Length: 446
Image 1 (cartoon, rainbow, N blue to C red):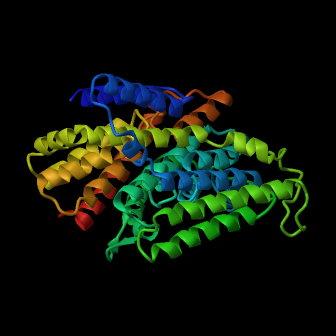
Image 2 (tube, helix red, strand yellow; image 1 turned 45 degrees about the horizontal axis):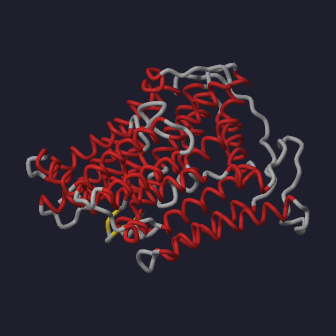
Image 3 (tube, rainbow, N blue to C red; image 1 turned 90 degrees about the vertical axis):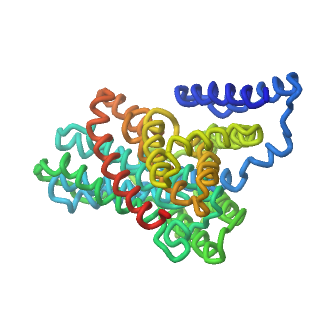
């Protein structure tokens, strides 16, 4: 069918662009989709546009948008920075402080998007490095790769996790316990334990004493409470099974609540107990318009476009063809297919964005399982997610959080080469992926 070739070419070209460009990635995908649809119509093989638009998962877009809005407001209060500074003040040495900040980055990124996590904690890391005249490069790399790891652990931690949840019909709670067995969360934690040894080899040698008295003032805890209510709401709805559009509505409501609180607090119309306090050590607080302008709308548009494009590839049989090819390479072995999917996910996502990769690969995973006669394919999906989210830690361009960390270091006068990033990111990735994938195989494998 000409449509299969046309949409395959359009997807590859769009994929190359979004993997190398920093702006207008969403519009670029939709332009590719529109041109491909027009070319198919001219060739007499027009797609069902209504059906493809129905493939756009509004629930995922709402989850991502709501969590991002909460994160933007949370940054303004400096609550996570306060926690990081408290950790530094009691750590005793630079090595322990660095390791604990990376652990905190992982905890925060379970509920806040990875880029936002880096933006929240990087200023503390840079300030610590300046005070002790230490090299900030390893610490910022550690923050970025730790956030990428733990962002995989929960439904709201990272867009690929949201995409997986929608594809497999998983609720927030299913990431913890699924069908009476430990879920992805515990696979990630096993990988995290292995990765801590890698980080300790880097940071543990620094015995320099840390003298950090006190911590920055938090302007308000209201956004933290809003985030807690959102997580609690997701957990409660998860007890009834896949929550469908409810999870998206909960996150969107939380985002709007955070933005509304910020607007009213900024205008001084809230009672004192709910209003954000002004503190001398806080920089100028952004207004609500600035927060809305800073919202990552491009990624929302990108996600919608990728859903549309992958739907077209499924409609034209491209996904099934790729699935049959991978099943053939595996030699008909479930373990061979699992290892092939995990390894390819790590390698590919080391250089390209994992959001379109995961979106495109999930239907392929289903096709592979069908060709191999595997009834429960979730171990393949979970392995692919682990590989895709951790593979980005190998290179400075493998994940958005890495790019942000490297950009912040560049502003401070530190240039990070591929080799220097990989010196920490590669062993971290290999340790965490190997242990996490092994957990998935032994728990979920056939």
